[in-house]
Each structure stands twice: as C-alpha cells, then as structure tokens.
Amino acid sequence: MKLQKIQSKKAQLETMQTVFIVLFLFISLFFVLVVVVAKDKANARTQIEQLVLLTEYKKAQIMDYLPELRCSFENVILKDCYDKLAIDSFANTVSKNQLYYNQLFGHAKITINEYETDWQTTEIYNNVPEDLTSTQTFFNPVIVYNALEAKKNFGVIEIEIYS
Image (spheres, rainbow, N blue to C red):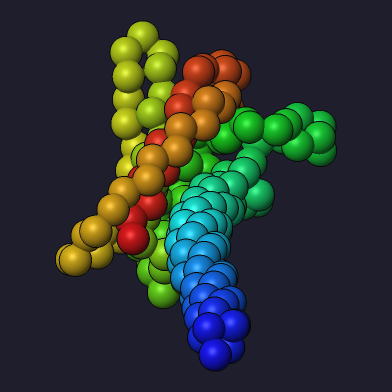
C-alpha cells in the first residue's frame, strides 16, 4: 500500500514537472515572439524612413537633368553647370506651367544662390503645402554661367522638400 502511494506521488511529481516544463517553454516562446515582432517593427520603420529619404533625394536630383537649365559649350553639356539666362527664363516658365512642375517636384521650394561679389538669390519654384509636417533640405554646389559676360560663378541650389 505504501509503495503504491509513493509511486502515485512520484507519478504526480513527474506529471507536474512535465506541465511546468511545457508551461516554461510556452512562456519562453511567447517572449521570443514578442522580441522578434518588436525588432521587425523597428526595422520596418527604419526601411520606411529610408524609402522616404530616397524619394526626396530623387526629387532633388531632377534639377540635374532638366535640359531647360543646363549650360553647354560647343554642344558639350557640363555637369552641375546652369545657365544664368536660362534660370531667369525657367522661373517664368514654371509660373506658366505650374501643373506640370507640381507633378515633377511636388511640395518643394527651389532656390539658386549665386555668388559673384555677394549672394544673389533666385527662387525658381515654390509650392509649400498648407499642412507642413516635415522639411528635408538638400544643397548642391553648382557653376552658374553668365553667357552675357562669359563668366562662371559659384552657386548653390537649395531644395527644400516638404512632406
């Protein structure tokens, strides 16, 4: 009789050990799952931020490929060279074709700052949204060529992209 009670208690202990081990495994698995989901959420947020930054950078790069602004010498287009006369003309073109340039640049403000003897600023595009949430600014050093005086001056394109 005592042997049967001892075996019964031993069986109960083994059953409780098994239950506690399984319970411990499920709790551990739950915590691992929570950590993995939190890490994936942080990675997804980082990837979204990088994608937004890349999209904004693409908008900033559009300026480099607009034929309306490029300057060339003997049919050779210089990289990061903008014609001063074309810049002034482009500002008027943008105001006439606002819908096209809104699709091209989106919500942004583009100014070209030229340094000759002092800084001269020309705003060529301005589409600031009413509900401004964040701003990303890009600066690009360029050459501003004045064809009337055959002079090359230092300039900076400032692109503020709003989102």
